[in-house]
Image (cartoon, rainbow, N blue to C red; front, top):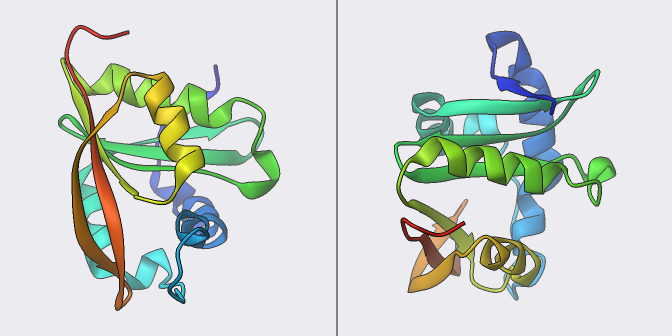
Length: 149
């Protein structure tokens, strides 16, 4: 496995993956979303930097994830590296870092991501409205209870 702890020198690579991947979360939404780069998104950047960040490095960073206590705060794979099991391996690693249970948040209509999470026993527990860069979107809280997996 090629997962390691984030180093400061990895920031440009993960910011690039974020820029290439963030709007994919909203591709099933009706609204028009504009990218707010990670380095300019004060709230998401602060939350991520407070987290433990892990990168999937295979001679270059192909994906990353972040966890804070029992919350998975980020999971992104470079679009050209998808379909190779990198997201699943990162998710398994992040779950192992959360302890007894895990929580994550996902756009309600991001069915491909939700299907992957459900394979790891995450269940939708809440629906709520939130916004990304000024555009409203419905989101789901998904929880994986202790004792699964």
